[in-house]
Image 1 (cartoon, rainbow, N blue to C red):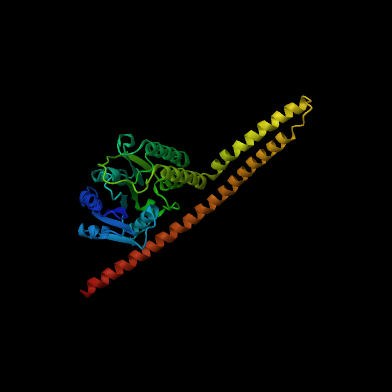
Image 2 (spheres, rainbow, N blue to C red):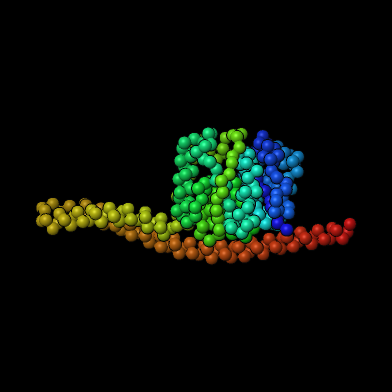
Length: 330
C-alpha cells in the first residue's frame, strides 16, 4: 500500500485555496491512498474554513506566521507521522498544474529518484519580471554548483519527496526551503531529478516577492548563506584568494622596484601587500575550521535522523493503539 499526501503551506489563502483544492486529485494510478494536508501559518482570514469545506484530511496550525520554510517543515513532519510514503508539496495560489502530479511522482514509484522537482517554463511565465527570472536562474546555477545536481528550476516549490528523503531534510533558512533542500539532497547523495511541468494562470502576487529590491537582497543573502553553509572550504578558498592574489601582486611589484635600486622605499605598498596576504591566509583558515564544523553538522544530522525515525514510529504506534482500543470499545 502506497500512501500519498499532498501538502500545501497556507497564509491568508482564502481567495485562492479553494481553486487549488478543487484541482487536486483523490485517485492516482499506482497510489493506494491520496490525502490532503494544509499548514495554516497563522492565517487571520477564512483559510481554515475553506480547507474544511473541501474536506482536507489534515490541518497543521501554527500559532503565528513563521514563514514559508517553517511551514514547509511542519508539514513534512506531519506527513511523516500520518504515514505518507510520498509527499507532494504545492502552493496555495494554484500556480502549479495539479494534473502533473502523476508525472511528478512517477520517478519515485519507478525507483529512479527520491526527490523530484517540477521545472517551470520560467521564460514563458509572463507575470515574472526580468529581475526575478534572472535571479531564479542565478539561484539554480549556485545550487547546481554547491550540490552537484542538475536541477534547472531550483526555486520551484512543486516537488515530490519520498518518505526516506523527507526524514533526512533539515531547513535552517527562514526565508525559503527550496534551494537548501536540493543542496542537502546533493550533499547526502539522495537521488534527485527534475521533470518539466506546466503552470496555471496568475491569481495573486507572490508573497516572497513584495518588491524587487527586497527580493534581490533576500535572494542574494540566501544564496551566499547556502554556499557558506554547504561548501565552506570552497567559499572561503575563493574569497581568500582575492586579497591573497592582490597582496602577492603588490609584493612582487615592491620587490621589482627594490631590486632595481629605486630611491623610494614604498613602505606603504609593502605594508598593504602584507595585510592583504595575511587576510587571505586567515580566510583560508576560516574555511578549514568551517569545513570541520560541517563534518560535525553531518554527524549531528545523522543522530537527528535516527531520533526522528524513532519518534515518528513511536507516535504512529500510539495512534494505532488508540485506533484499536476505539474499535474494541465499539
